[in-house]
Length: 311
Image 1 (cartoon, rainbow, N blue to C red):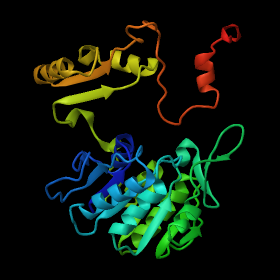
Image 2 (cartoon, rainbow, N blue to C red):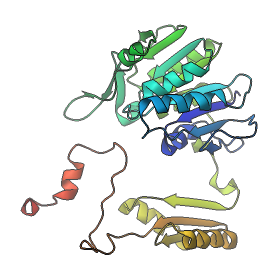
Image 3 (cartoon, one colour):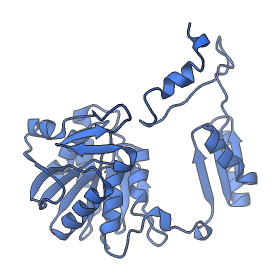
């Protein structure tokens, strides 16, 4: 099985996409910088470029690609946000600056989460109707000097840069199978949906994280949970004595976690921060919203739980 070379613009994206290719026998290490030593196995890198300006993101990705550990028959993957947040076009250009490729296949759809590509435009499915989101990939790539061919499910996979419509997992699976069979060096650009499709189409099975047997994971095991959602808190509570609440992320907390791992071999760690501490807003509860998930009125319901509180 070919080794993975994946770059994402943030840590969450790197983990989400790398997960699809990981297995018990072949884990995928995730780095914050290009590894200093040669890595023959798969790897993923968080480029940290989500919050940079576009040109800096392009340069950083190009430099990372140029210094990727070489390996024969690698699978190259530029992880895109399914809502095209960040600098997708410039980061793909960074790959193209640094590599000689037969083809670049762009398929950002993630149908499971209602993100589809139609007519080359990324769409978000919602009860009130589908709406376009993010950049216009073909137009923006053309503005940077890259010619892009728009393709639909069932088309042959051409050389050069192609942008693919996809509205179902089956569309992505068909594309993955055709692209892998085409041979040559291909840069795959997509979200977790394309990662799962590629993992399922590669030889020897999918190897995705669902095949991992928790009982066989090596110790120590550390779980880090950054949300105070009631469902997550209930799941942590179900872990019993492994649950560990921290007041902050300072050195004393790090030492306590290390000691717990040495003693017990496992810890489920979360920050116990019920609200603002000190100052005029002491005790005020903080609501954290992460990612682009939820319906349009989600935050409104949180901020205005009843009509009487709108003042």
